[in-house]
Length: 495
Image 1 (cartoon, rainbow, N blue to C red):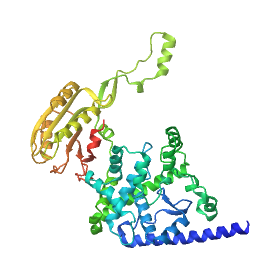
Image 2 (image 1 turned 120 degrees about the vertical axis):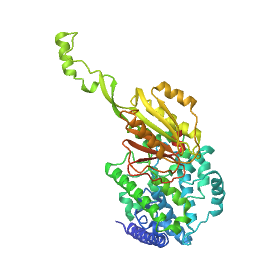
Image 3 (image 1 turned 60 degrees about the horizontal axis):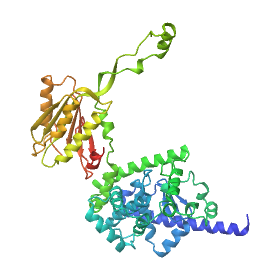
Image 4 (image 1 turned 90 degrees about the vertical axis):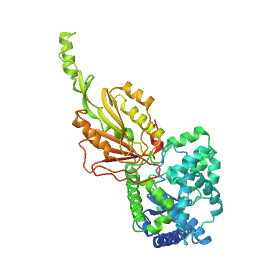
């Protein structure tokens, strides 16, 4: 190794040691001020690279020269950037949908994070862009009830601005770059050493030249599509080795658990900080909320029944072909005429018609449920479905036996009640129907509601799911024997 090269490596190694000390100082400062984040801070391994600062939820990539220069200009800036990147990991912003519009998603994530940081009122961090941020945040507060990245993303998509316009807005909120979200290297390898870092000098961020946003903004639509295809699933993980994919999945699971721990801590031991961090609590409730595919869930309520359909699973082609070879037109075995399939025959849909439930929302829920039930593998030609409307008492019990009757009910449905909320009358009514032989083999009840009510004391003889309509990230409690499903208005509207 030449003497000059050796001196350069020693210089870079020294810069890297100093940069790590600066980052350690930032982390320890946050640890002292944000004890509810103690388990999240320091989770990512530090790796030097050429660029600025970024994270893939597994590593914190940093440019030593960038860190030292920024720290020299303002000692509080690195602390803010470290917190900013940690919150990206907690809220799993790196795990993006392949069809995401990247400049809009980058902007939405940075706004959500910066809004949380501002609410913490930490003296150990500075914000040079507060005035520019205020202009955007004030407008968002007027138009949005919740400042999650997803809500902000949808808001900006509706504005239909150019990618360049979104990037311009983002300059007031960005504290890191997001290259590692979309172009993740399989293994950092030599980037973790001073020699590897030196080799990357002059090659652009992460050794890849232009940043992802710059490439998307300057290239043709055909080239953008090609770039996205080269990324596999859009998150930069499609081409990764199985080991690397497993590491990233384990990291995702780790951050999910940490987010749950943070929410619990803020709701209990750190209530004072939790009261200040309103937007952080909203984001934590959103990320920790149980995700539910309503169609898949509803199929769990199906029961076995005999259907007039060829049962191809029990048909033996060997005997069939052998018989045809001997007797030509006469087969030794024919397919069975009946098949057991999971389909809905007896079912109860209970509707909370208290004053807080909107009629059009109820109708959308019934329509969505019907669309799923009447699909080919979910509906008998003859059914016994009761749609029961109830507030504090039973308002209507409408019996449906055919698809035609269901269609007619949807056309003429009217909401009745609009009183208080009590779940018990429905269960008492259904128990009476079972006693009177109205149901022969009732297996499931869906109870659609948007709030709290009084539950029955005892577990019924059939499966029961409470479907809560909630756009506010509340966490509803149900009895141990009941299933809880939480849907948003947008999920109900989806076809």
